[in-house]
Length: 193
Figure 1 (cartoon, one colour):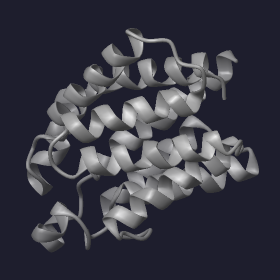
Figure 2 (cartoon, rainbow, N blue to C red):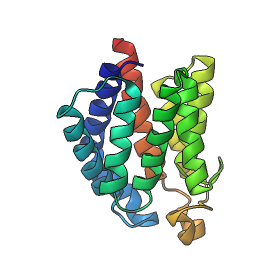
Figure 3 (cartoon, rainbow, N blue to C red):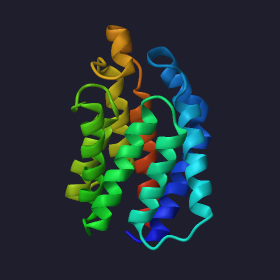
Figure 4 (tube, helix red, strand yellow):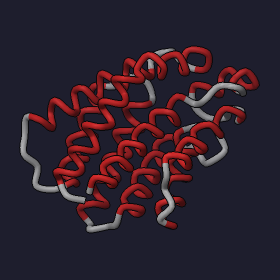
């Protein structure tokens, strides 16, 4: 991926986050701290502002810059998790990996930091499904939507939502929803490529 596409991807992701900010916090209220939307909106606004102020030679540099902004500006678990993901993606980009491998590297970092595996109602559920779809060249908005929706019927056993146990069932995982927005933005950028 070149720097311009990576930048456009992040801009689109930011637009989606700003647009869905209240909904993300609504999702987070019954099973978390209710601040996922506000945290992500603040982090991505800072990231995009930072991207607009500079020129970047590669997608790796773009992801690195986004990572630093999210780690420094976003509270809760989402800042460190997304920050780690973009850090892993930056390294994979630098190493010349293809898109599925870049997203896999992001997932690896999320799992390293959060210790979650698929099926625990976390963003890992969406990221791992997206990696599989990308490997087959079959990533669609429907796939993303299905992965996000699937978290609704899961019982959270990791993260903040695990504190409410059974009551987490019936709620979409907020980190999975924001991850869905990230990958929808990716699809839109890829379609325009």
